Image (tube, rainbow, N blue to C red; front, top):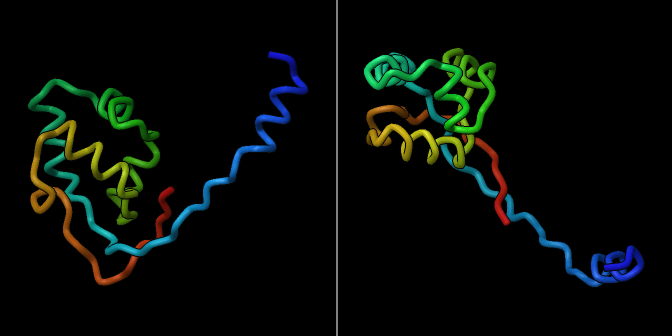
Length: 99
């Protein structure tokens, strides 16, 4: 495909708008995650690669930062644990956006 055709195709595409939303922020029970990693033979680095996050983000969750909804779902899918077991809801809301 020629560059000009690609540009025409790109300009003809409609931009998808994100829809903002708010959900409850959560605390992450890090003891459970550390225990799960050690029980299943994962290092923190390997777990972070599986989830698709940086190690710094993982440690920020220990300091009270709330993971995004996508990250929460990945953690639950990988660990197979229940949401109520790992995450505790907070009063404050967390912003997000989806297509």
